[in-house]
Length: 303
Image 1: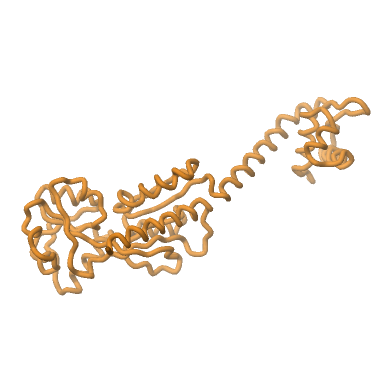
Image 2 (image 1 turned 30 degrees about the horizontal axis):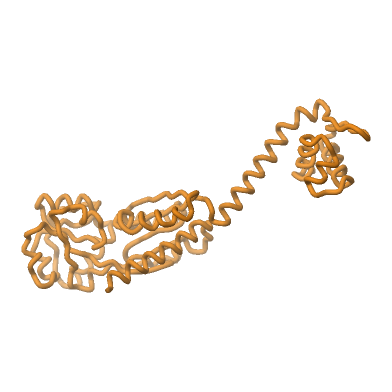
């Protein structure tokens, strides 16, 4: 069936205006061209849709019956075209991000708030998950962007921006580790530690640092989420090692944190996307805002 939208739009416009002259003007067509569009539509459908003479234009019974359906087709298409243009211009859409919990609770909310101030019609879906899950969600294209800790060596993944995140030891107020001149791995190897789950980037880094120093941590407990680890420290089960930017630390007035004097406790953090894929315009714009914020945050920690 050789039916096209130009013919449908021509029919709907004539029906709405009741005039070939006015319809042709609205469609920026000559009247003969408009007449051809209507005639081809009728030929395709093998039915008369419009009765017209030198004075009057009126829909046939079949034309009246078809008009609501054709109007919905035009309205739906116009809505799709408008929405597509808005998305392509980055004025609307959904940004999907998978991120480490430490960034979901610290840097990311501030960047989202600033971005939405300029893009109020943009929505966000944030998955706060452990490092391996971030990688999986980006690779499977469930999300457009990921913030992941540790080295990224996957040909399916592009690193957009890289920064570092210093790990801190978290301890109760009054603990002796708060009075030493420097927190070293030798000292950490003598105290009970609440370690993060083995699937987290923090645990991977901690294990590697202890292994490089030829030492083993004294594991008191394990936790998947930072707030759980902080709660265990508060309960006196041991100390823990978390990113210095983690707001879970700041939420506890009776806990303190200090950086660890060992380069092995610097966690690389990367903003990533699926390799070879074009992100939606709004995700590209948010990526640029996120890179700028990460660069400022990284520079602030180095000063």
